[in-house]
Length: 226
Image (cartoon, rainbow, N blue to C red; front, side, top):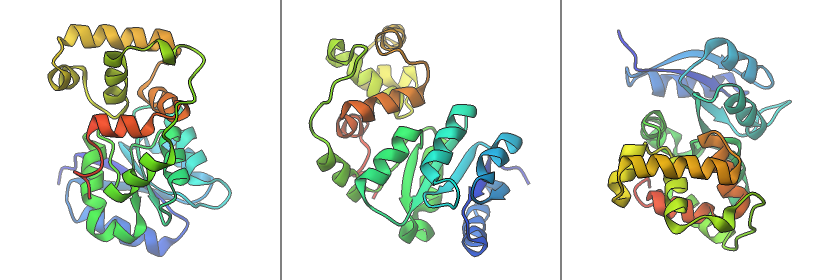
C-alpha cells in the first residue's frame, strides 16, 4: 500500500493517540510513522522527518506551542496541525506564530481531522470558521514592525499574506492578477524589507504586527473551513 504523507502524533495520552491514529490510517493516504509525548516530540520529529505532525497544545514538560516552534525551526518542511481543547484566540494565535499551519478543536477531531490534514498537506492553512471570527476580533490595531511594515505597499501585503498561508507564486499571480515574475520580485522585496527568510517567518511577522485577521481574510480562510 502506498501512502502520500508520513505523520507523527504528539499527545500525552496513549488512548487519544490510538484514536487519532485509527482515524488517520483509515484514509489509506496517511501513514502514522511515529508517536511521542512531552519533550520527546522534537527529537522524534528530528529522527523520523515526517511530512506532517499532529500536535496536542497541552503536553507535559514542553507545551505544544514551544514544541511547534522548535520543530518548524529545525525542520522547515514539516507542517504542523495543532489540536486544542480551547477556542481562546491567544492559543490559536500563538500556534500560528510558532509556525503551525492549522488548528482544530479536539471536539471536532472525529468529523474534521482528515479534512484539516488534507488542507495542511496541500500547503494550506486551516482553521474552523468560529475561531477565525474570534481571531478577527482579538486584534484589529496594527502594532507596526521595526524593519519596514509601514513601507509595504498594498500589493506587497497581499503577496505576504498569501505566501504565509501557503500559496505558490503561480497561484498568487492568478489570484491577484499579476505576472508570476512580479510576484517573485515582491517576495524578494518582502524578505529584504522585513528581514525574513521563510514562510514561517512571514507568519510570525503578520501575527506580531497585528494583521492576522487581514491575512486570513485575504487568503479566504474561515467560512470555507467550517
